[in-house]
Structures are given as C-alpha cells and as structure tokens.
Length: 235
Image (cartoon, rainbow, N blue to C red; front, side):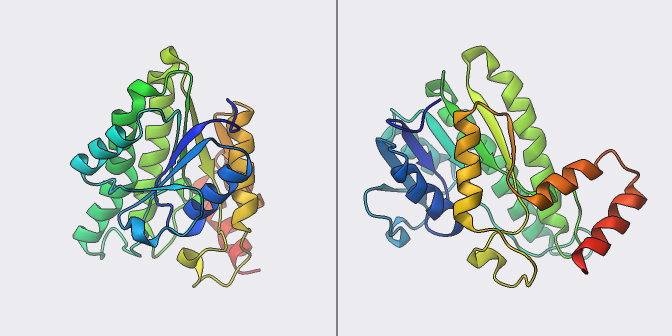
C-alpha cells in the first residue's frame, strides 16, 4: 500500500491528529485527501477536499461514501473525550463515547468496506485501549472496544486483502490534550509512524514510548501494571 497517488479519507480532520494526517498525506503525494468533519468549514488545510461527515449519523456516512467512491484508504481518527467515569459518570456521556469510538468507527468501516479491496483502514486507538485511567472510564471502555473491533474487522476483511491497522499512542501535543502537563509527542511524529506502518503493511503501530510500555505490561499481573503505571505518571 502506497500513500503516493492514493485517494484517502480522514475523519475528524478539522484539528489535532486528523488535521496533521491531512497535511502529511498531501506531503507524501496522496492524489486526493477528503478531509472530513461535522463542520467542514473549520477545515483549513489547503489542497484537501472538505467533506461533511458525522460518524454517528448513518445518513451522513452514506453521503460521504457517495461523494468519495474512489477512496482506498480510510483513516478513522474522529473521537471525543468526555472525562466520564463508569460508576459515577453521566450515562449519556458514556454512551456518546461508545457511539463515537465503537459504533461510529464500525459504521464508517461497514459503509466503505466494499470499495477497500486491496486498500487500507487505519483506526486511531490509544494506549488507554489497554490501561484504565481515573477520569477516563468511558474513554477507556470505548477505546478497548474499538481495539477489539479493529482486530475482528482485520480478520473479516482479510479475504478482500484490506489492511487494517491499529495505531496506539500516549499523549500527543494537540488541543485535546492541552490539559496534560506530562510528556507529549509531536503530532507530526505520530502521524509519520502511522503512515509508515500503512506502507509497511503493519497490523499495529506503537507510535511512542508510552504505548510500547503499556503494551509490554499486558502480560503482567494487573496489580503490577497499575503500580508501575502510577509510578511512571508521577515521575
């Protein structure tokens, strides 16, 4: 799978990693980049094709498929972070997390899958797919579900030779993570790792040191995982 000459659709391209994906895809020679958002008027990347897309709205997804029939790479980047915990958080916010990260991503994949034979899907996941964090219970559950979705869809689309790649990262220096005072990776570095992964036909990209560390902890006892994670986050 080559980025150069490809037609690519990016969800949530009005800011953060989505905006950087649009910029980097153009830099790598993508023939056409559909940069989508619920409000396409907020997309400010010269050279892209702005397109309205609300991934929680099936009619909006159908319109996007009709507008971009030649797309061969879909980057599922759109997401939200409500800060809702599972026990005490607002259930409507928790449902929004799941509707966006799981059902929204799944609906986009289901709609575009018929045209992605010999193409690719990249799902922007998170180290929080694997590690719970107080204050992000809804986000953790939804991203864990999206990780499982990614693994299942990879098997289901193998027969049509669609690459399905999961991108895991820690904190990126975007407006969504402006509140976080710890180490943050440059969006350019995260996106470069993701696009390199697509071109290398990799099913999983661990884009930074934190995602690699959390993945390595998965074989440990949960007591060890959370003790080590707490120590790492306070140093």
